[in-house]
Length: 395
Ligand SMILES: *Cc1c(COP(=O)(O)O)cnc(C)c1O
Image (cartoon, rainbow, N blue to C red; front, top):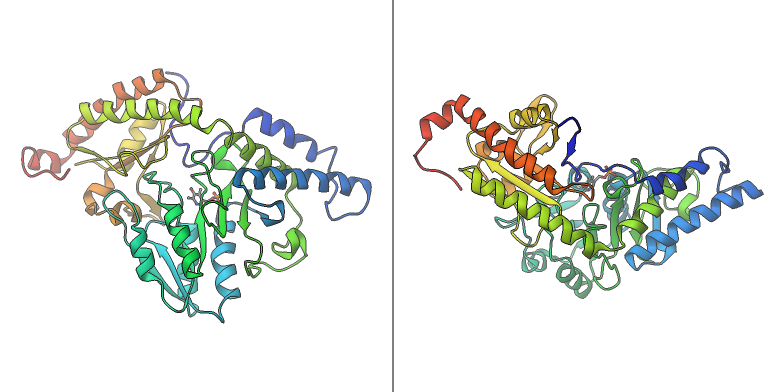
């Protein structure tokens, strides 16, 4: 194979040509500042309004409820830190889960250092949160529940509707990070009682460095950066217009024909999953068997290191991702895999393969041909495998 088989769509996606095409004029010909009153400014204001309408429509929100940001990370920070500090008089307790994206998790940890209390709810072996746990964790001083719609590592889809109903009943704000879910499952903020929702363009075939936060009308939100009055005084700074135009188009495309796309993705994913589980022994699928994103698969291969597996796959032209994040030179296993109960050594041998529109059956079959050989070779080099072979196996 002389081209890359890209199976890392949860990390990022390419920008679709029709998205780029809409963006390009806003770098060169139509470069006005949307805050300017002259005709150039008015033209970019129109483009900004259209992107806002498209984004709102995808969520069944009102355009005035959309705040453009520099990405999913900033939107999570704004949602969590912005509502926490604005609602401090009401209380200082926040409920989240132990498997959130670092953008949400680290925002909560920052708040903890600044006088807030955070409950990190556990998940079951599939990565599911029990809505009953959410209900029981709510206290007098709870001001925010932040639970992601779908997990970026193992693809598990949470019972967002149930959590939204509980939050509404108890009068607590509900934020969900839907970065991975947008374009994969419907996200109707009215229907699901969502007060705040995070999305990002680059996970859905838009450009990097742009995202949005939906914040329901009436939700109190503080600035997290300070400056001009852009975005109805909720996010300071001149709008990144080409990127915002791209986000609007990408989200519009991503939320069309979801079911047809998912059907194709699911067929490829299930071919991959059953192929791997049947040809590689001592292997487990991480995440929920059915309540998972159509394009997500995540495996643990006992007796090998995920990083070694990634490098070998890369040499064969396959771009994948491991479950472990390499932070500052130390290899910490993924907090998500630990939260679903995997022991450290198993969490280390994990592999995430996330599919997208352009993947083909032929590519999946190539992976199914190459991967078992690589795993076999790495295991033969592993002292652990040779010692334990035939012994007690964790799957
Ligand atoms: C990628 C991702 C983010 C961060 O979005 P950026 O636009 O890359 O900052 C947040 N949450 C989830 C679930 C993600 O997958």
